[in-house]
Image 1 (cartoon, rainbow, N blue to C red):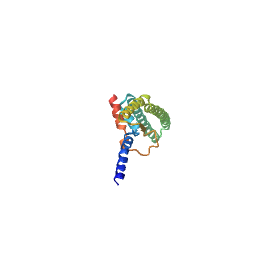
Image 2 (image 1 turned 90 degrees about the vertical axis):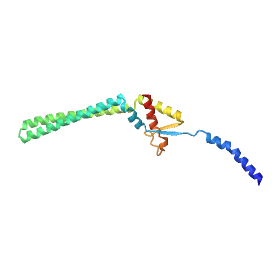
Image 3 (image 1 turned 30 degrees about the vertical axis):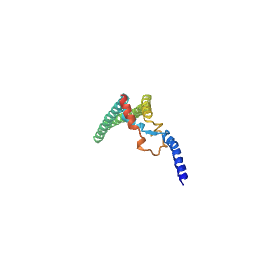
Image 4 (image 1 turned 135 degrees about the vertical axis):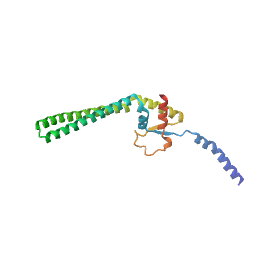
Length: 177
């Protein structure tokens, strides 16, 4: 019986270095990042985004102004119709249609311009270079092997909030400024 105990203890003692080696072996560490949130947080104050916001505000102001002009013309058309002045009514309707067509084309053109500008901002090399450098710094300093983007992978069905490094990346980018 003592011999069996000694063999059992010796076997357990022999397994300790093996178990310890497995425990010390590097495990692959994954992280995830919400690149959209990084973009909106970090680049909100960049010159490119300020330019986009300025153009968007300018567009919205112009559309509001032109819409108010159309509403005023609409009232004049109704007044001309009520007073029986067909010539004035037709003249105002022609002016209304001209301004309406202009506003429609202006809106279409500006929306294309703004969409293009926004897409360019979101896919700029400058943004991704800074983002990559920040991710690389965090991954290497904290032992991550792989960082996945939440936007680019539909295969991430679940992740623990403990692997989300988005806030760390935003902080790293902010310290670069």
